[in-house]
Amino acid sequence: MPLEFEKPILELEKRIAELKETARSTGVDLEAEIRLLEERLARLKQEIYGNLTAWQRVQLARAPGRPTTLDVLEKAFQDFLELHGDRAFADDPAIVGGLAYLEGQKVVVVGHQKGRDTKENLYRNFGMPHPEGYRKAMRLMDLADRFGYPFLAFIDTPGAYPGVSAEERGQAWVIAQSIQRMSRLKVPAIALILGEGGSGGALAIGVANRVLILENAWYSVISPESCAAILWRDAKEAPKAAEALKLTARDLLAQKVVDAIIPEPEGGAHKDPLRAIQNIKEALLKTLEELKGLSPEELYQDRYRRFRALGAYAES
Amino acid sequence: MALERLFRRKRPSGVNRDVPELWTKCEACGVQLYKKEFRENLYVCPRCGHHHRMPASERVEMLADAGTFQETTGLKPLDPLGFVDTKPYAERLKAYQEETGRQDAILGGTCTIGGVPAVLLVMDYAFAGGSMGSVVGEEIARGAERAAAEGRALVIVAASGGARMQEAALSLMQMAKTVMSLDRLWAKRLPYVSILTDPTTGGVTASFAALADVIFAEPGALIGFAGPRVIRQTIRQELPEGFQRAEFLLKHGMVDRVTDRRKLKGELVRALRHLHPGVPYAVGV
Ligand SMILES: [Zn+2]
Image (cartoon, rainbow over all chains, first blue to last red; front, top):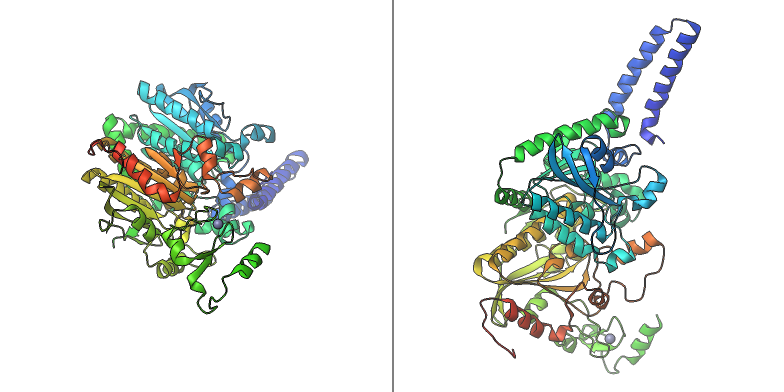
């Protein structure tokens, strides 16, 4: 299903395709009309995609067809071997992870996983992890440290699951532990926000030396809907909340919450997932190269300095 | 509410209606309480034992050894995002500052606790629901670093609805910052004790508050990640009795002890003395 603001573009594209088909089947010369419409399409795209609001970007971040963690692992990496389970309670399908090669480099990978259709979304709990998901992530961090392989984390969650069993099993505790565990990695760590970076459930695998973000992804302390429900007392004010939260890639770069923005194809990553995944791969390789050469202690200190410096306050 | 009417009828006769500030009532059982005694009883209802929220300054008084507390907090909040909802964040901050006489939602400093040198940090729920923005995060990180540098224990009393929305991603980053600062204590083998009070939820529970060497919780305190309202909306079911209360967390293995506030200082001192490598064997404090 197309997003609301994409519709005028899709309609125009459809009309152009129809005209082209008519021209081909009837042999009538419609070249001039088609060129006119194509020029209009280019202007329309520029107008819409060049002026995306924060709320439109949030919708792009959630668009069906946007690359998920598994899509990236399958297409940008080689021989991804998925590892399951937290060795304590269960396997959480909302977080996936395992071993892989990135252009021949051994890496340990982990990421939130949303479903690519309704059935899978139910299975994946819409990418909202339970405590066992974070325990699995921590187990993979241990593995990365033990073998000295870089740790790569893909963030794409509306948030950690707010449910009874999650609370019973210490959701807050595992998120805190995962933040701590990741901050102590002795290997290069990169986090990449693919789509949604919802609150502590996202940060739990986001304490990296470098944090990258796709152009239309968002990252904040709360979702725009929940923020609107609390501060405006109306979830329908989400577009206003999205604006106020300054949650877009460009805003986050200005706040130094992220270190680099990965460009998406025109209209968003779901328009050309392979192109987006190629951009992701290039960004990961470049960032790994930057972190090469740093000793385990330097990597730890680099992460400490990075997060220690974040915040805005005045001395008394 | 029927209970309230009952309590009004029971109001001691002869009390002048013009001086109602002398009296208050228990939020749980409704019993009439003489404020001065209530305060001396650390805001615990003498009848039903309900633990009421307590002002941050009195919390300091209750835990720090008399005359030893020296405040170190005082950083001022900014409005880095120019956040405006139904009211500008800058205005909200000003109102909270006037109301509490504090710059932000935390009060802390150095002191001794049962003779053990400590950095004591107390979150102030009266200031923006004790929410953690850049100031709270920075004060906690500095507190941990100061404790490590000066050989002090770290004691944090949590009372917070979570991260502060109006500083958005920067608030979220305070979770990482505070957690990482605790490593400085680890490196020096210094103790960190966390006291969870009503309420402690969201990004505060899910960061420094959960990572202490010893975790105390006050009876009946609401403690968790998601707030009960959000959970109820998500699962569309009523929540079990006692869910997310301190006793529930003790049962599920998340906290070490649920301690009555009137015994809290004693237990805190014992824990600090046990843990602090610089304190010799000592019983019966
Ligand atoms: Zn009572």
